[in-house]
Image (cartoon, rainbow, N blue to C red; front, side, top):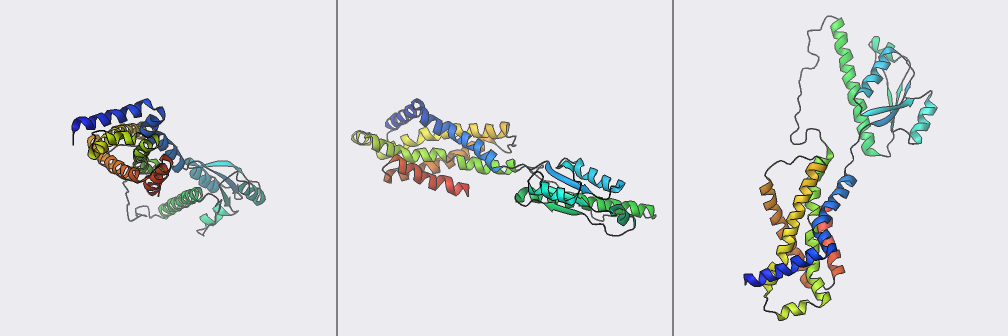
Length: 306
């Protein structure tokens, strides 16, 4: 193992990466670009679900129910339906994702202490949106029912009773708002950092296609020196790409970074060493760059995706 000869190979590969714009982009910038695309593709922040309401009761209590339901902004009112037929038409045309039907006698039933019915129609073509709308309507309805029951108890002289015997307090660590982006970011970051490994898989195949591998073999450069010289440039460019991806996730997507950046970069170096080693091992046996690229995608990209 001769350090001088290894550094010569490192210099050769660095010049190739820097001078070749496509290689430089694929090595340094492609993980960041791929991260942006996948973050927007996989993350769906559901908010302001459009709903239509048919209020056949038109009472103060039904108005209170609707106002409270819309107050959070999780669902937005797209209009009041004149009848059931209009409500169904707008739901079928996809103008709204949910519909609410308040029957006549809604307030009278509650005042009389009877069970009041409310119908909710959900567009199931988008399951995530449907689940979100259902959970919001059900959660608010239960909250309003508890509030009305507490008011009734107070009127009956039982105001000192605790209606809810268990005070449940939930604290979510790391991601208090439960934003999907915060959960997806670390996983997608690990996946896109497989791109340097894909390029490492093509490096010996490129030498073989261009006829320069035979020239390298005739030089005093040994096998270990050649491997080290091939690994180091892609390791450095991969670490630079990792820093760019972290900055993008933290400052663009507002995902918090918890922990030591130094430890993160050290673990990234180990990760890159493993992927680059696998890539170089594959490039020994694969003859063409196209086959090397396809094989590397199967090894690095798709397992990480799933």
